[in-house]
Length: 277
Ligand code: NAP
Image (cartoon, rainbow, N blue to C red; front, side, top):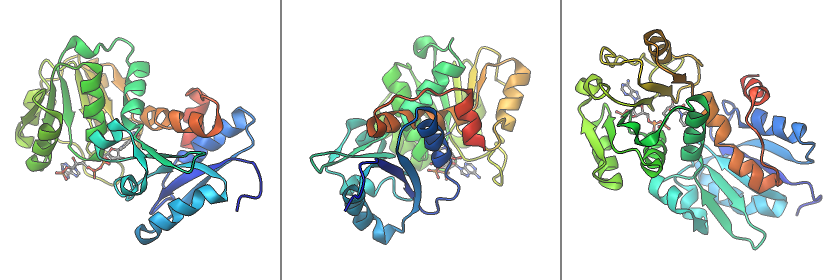
C-alpha cells in the first residue's frame, strides 16, 4: 500500500494531543535532513490490533506507544524484549522487514541516560535509591536501577499492594516502606526519584516530608510539567544535585529514532527547546 520509500513513524495513544514526541522526532528529522515523517495517531483500544497490522503495509517502520496501549501491544507483537516483559509494557514498536513486529521498552534507558547526563557524579553502587510511586513508570525506573547495580531500592506507594507486586516481580533488593513513613526512606539514600504523578500541573502536591533530605542525595522527578517541580525546588535549596524529567522523555526516544531512521540522534539544548515548543 506504501506509495513512496519515505519512512513513516509515529505515536499511537488515546488521547494523543498531549504527546511531545512529534515535536522531538520532527526536530531530529529536520536537523539530520532525513526524508521521513512522524505522525501522532489517536487510536481507540478496539482498533489497536487492526491499526498496528495495517501500518507496516502503509510504509510505517515503527511507532511509539503511549497510554492506554502500552500493555496491549505486547499481545500483538511477535517478539518482545526481556526488559519489556520485565517492565510489563512496551513504548516502542519496530516493524521489521521480515514482517515481524518487535516490541521494546526504552523508558528505563531514557531514565538512566537522563540521570547520568544530569548528575554525572551519580554512582549506582553509592547507596540505596528511594523511589516514590509504583505505577507503570516506576517499573521501568526500578528495572533500570537494579540492572545498573543499585544495592537497594526503597519503595513507597500510596497503594501498598502495588508496591508489593513490584517486590515480588523484582526481588529482595526492593524494600517496601509504608506511604505514611515514606520520609524515613530518604535518610542516607544516594538517590531520590519521584515516579508518582504528584507535583504535575493539575495534580496534587507531593507531601512526603523531606526533613531527612541532605545535599548528598541526588533528586530526580519524572514529572516535567512544570519542569521545576516543588520537589526539585526544595532539593535545590538544600543543595542537592537535581535532574528534571524532560530529559527522560527525550532520551527514551533515541533508540526508536535510530532504528527507524538509521541515525542516532543527540539530545541537546535544541532538542529540549523543540520538546517545549
Ligand atoms: P501510573 O501508572 O498511573 O502511576 C501513578 C503513580 O502515582 C502511582 O504510584 C500512584 O499511586 C501515584 N499517585 C497518583 N495520585 C496520587 C496521590 N494523590 N497520592 C499518592 N500517590 C498518587 O502513571 P505512570 O505511567 O507511572 O506515570 C507517573 C508519572 O510519571 C506521570 O506524571 C507521568 O507523566 C510521568 N512519566 C514521565 C516520563 C518521562 O519521560 N519523564 C515517563 C513516564 C511517566 P497509587 O498506586 O496509589 O494510585
